[in-house]
Image (cartoon, rainbow, N blue to C red):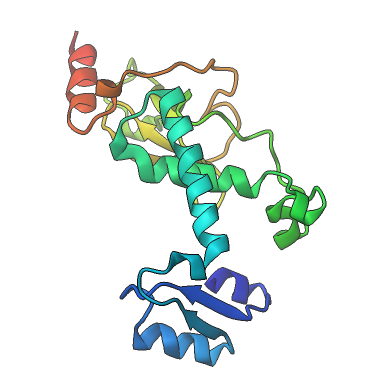
Length: 204
């Protein structure tokens, strides 16, 4: 919402349930300052906000399908859900007469070339300044999970450490789009197991 206002977009109303993250003086003051009408729903009545509730259900169903296809553990649900939302915003919709939400918002056609399958294997470039020695590997395996919220590049799960990282967009040096989609065993990316398993491989 802040980004939309910064771009000069006009938001007429804001509807939410009665959660504390929404119903508070700070948010109310922000909405009033920007001329946005706040319409809270009544407790236990999601039908008062049908468009959002329906979309939430659609996105969750897509998230389940992606997680099943990539064989990902539940701990990665937030990352997969964000990926699904990003793809949805890059997809043409009948409501916009075949235009994507991203194009409607920015006025530019989205670049689909950089989009990959969620959970597919890529490589994170390791700068020479942080390599152990001259014979150390120049890249390490990572799983693709979308794009950073700010700037260009890729959002990846670094398999050796089990941490989410953001790699700069600098061609195939940072990510290889030709790498085939490979389902990864659940235990391979679970917290704690991923790092120890790969470290043992490097020690050999």
